[in-house]
Image (cartoon, rainbow, N blue to C red; front, side):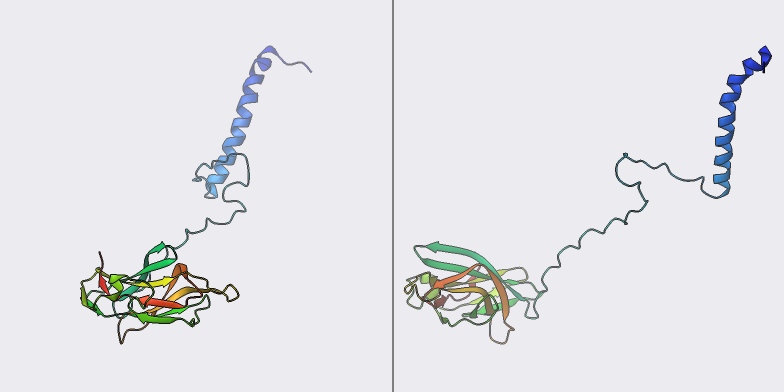
Length: 211
């Protein structure tokens, strides 16, 4: 079948117009359905399309909750540790985490606990207890006044010495501390522990102002 020259000239125009009319009709139908306000979606070409068959984004992990301040207003924590030729000194710090002024005096009551928080058979006594000559441990007890946020320190003294290799060495992994009489004991985990060996003897220093 042959077409006139005029119809042949219009053929390219028809080829362009008809698809455009089809697209316009599809858009009009989508608009009537309420889908015309969609935002453009970006896709890299790998994985699932955004929003299709994917789980909603997970919420960020919660921030760690700070430890509550005890009713006494005094919070116990581990301080620095010093070691020299088998002699060990572990600092224990108490912080006034309350809103009122507090005082501490004398020596805290302490107990060493194992990894299951059971008391160990250890002799704990006030002062240097013949372990070594350390003046701070044998200082006279004094009253330390703590304003909110201020600290006081005590310390533990022991020797890491194995005198009998057939006996299992003693390791304290937790420490129970009662700051002063009438306070509830607090248990803290010990970083590195108290490695007593076979000596099972610990001295305790009196409370002193934090420096």
